[in-house]
Every structure is written in C-alpha cells, then in structure tokens.
Image 1 (cartoon, rainbow, N blue to C red):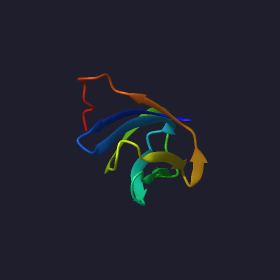
Image 2 (image 1 turned 90 degrees about the vertical axis):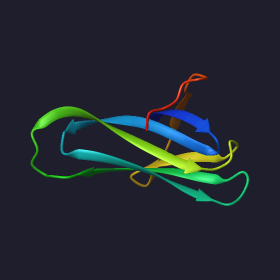
Image 3 (image 1 turned 90 degrees about the horizontal axis):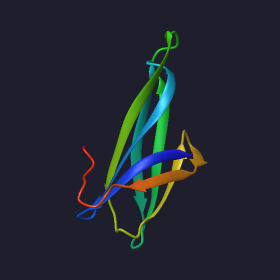
Length: 100
C-alpha cells in the first residue's frame, strides 16, 4: 500500500506521498487520469524510475505530488508501475492545507 495525504479544496484534489528507495538515483512521478463524468473514475499513476544504473547504496525518500480537478465523490484507485495497488489515504486536518 502507498500512503498519501489528501486535501479537497474548491473542486481540486491534492495528494502528497513519499516513497523510500535504496539509492538517490531513483525517482518517483505521480499523475492523475480522470475519466467519465460525475462521479468520475480517477487513476493515480505512480511511476518509479532509476536514473543511473551504478549508484551508491544510500536510502533516500522521494516525495511526489498529484493534483487534479474532480468531484469530491470521485472514485479513486492507483497503480504503481502499471500494477494495481492499495492506497492508504489520510485527510489533512480541517483548516490545514497541503503545501504543493
């Protein structure tokens, strides 16, 4: 499962997550694919890549952010490198905002 913080504000969903990698040469990118109409079907595509094959072993954490417009009732699922994954979504506290 991938853990994400979520905020819904003025018609826009904001997600922030992070992943741990064995080297600093790994990167992570997140994007949203929105299909259909109310309630929309949204797939959060999370993709990891290795930018250099020979990289010293040093654990690092990479953060990713995803924002998209959809209704509050949108059906949200996710993939990691093309494979379906479980999401653990935590809503930000009322009155707080994610820094994007």
